[in-house]
Amino acid sequence: MEFKAQSIADFLGGTVEGDANVSVSDVAKIEEGRPGTLTFLSNPKYNKYVYETEASIVIVNQDIELEAPVKATLIRVPDAYKAFASLLELVQQAKGNKVGIENPSFIDASATIGKDVYIGAFAYIGKNVTVGNYVKIYPHTYVGDNTTIGNDSILFAGVKIYEDTRIGAACILHAGAVIGADGFGFAPKDDGTYQKIPQVGNVILEDLVEIGANTTIDCATMGSTIIRKGTKIDNLVQIAHNVEIGENTVMAALTGIAGSAKIGNNCRFGGQVGVVGHITIGDHVNVGAMAGVSSSIKSNNTVLLAPAMDIARAAKVTAVYRNLPQLRQQVIDLAKEVAQIKIKLEE
Image (cartoon, rainbow, N blue to C red; front, side, top):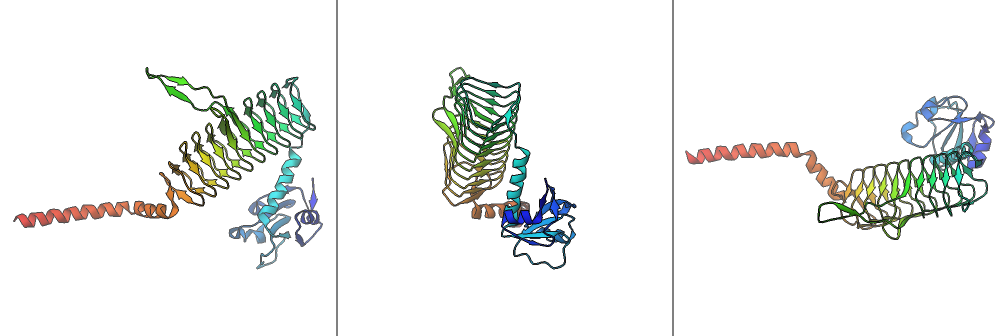
């Protein structure tokens, strides 16, 4: 599909600067722009490319001041990054606009299927499942018994949903995600072996949750593991049994949250963060990459390192750590001086 600059500007509420009739049919990074593509500029570090790019249209912030003429047509908007993201969302929707039920697939007779859904080949829909309107379930996806999937949600290829899971509206689950597998519960026995503790709870994903590829969210031992509205979880993240994550929290890849941890709203986790079980993390907490959180954290804090500590203390610790070679040498030199003083005293 092709779009003219004026049509794009009208959709974004922006203004055109240049040829309003120029058309684009693809998107590109600004440094890789070519004729017929649309790109954007929001980071000042990339300002030089607006004068060099071959892209036909560039979305820019409305307050940008140009230092030289540009070849591309500009669309000025309040926030170029957000505007471009909105356009990419439209492109994605156009690409993924599938409807219908492919064969072979299995849908139990007791399942309820909404209107205009897509169910790909080799998908399995279990007993008493409810699939909302406009849902897309891609091939090789398993949806266990008694699961509910809200309107407009997308389950990409190979997603596995265990029984009794509740998925809200407009959720996105990427390929290989596993929702509702058993929590890691075992009781040690006198003979050194372990007895499995049955995990009889479920998982609840509220509306607008996104789960990355190959991420796993375990069911609760009892009750529910809960991911609140608007939370976004990256690839390869492990969420253990009975964890609760608040609204609009984001977690980067390789993070692990141990059982029964409670995490607040609007938190941000860097990659490879580890959180021990049975602690509470408040709202608006930022956790730096590779941090190890071993105790509860109050709201409105930023923590770094392992064990995690507040950012001010972490900065001091890091400064000392960087100076360890110099401090070590100073200790060695002092030891030599003390030894020489002892020798002189003994003479």
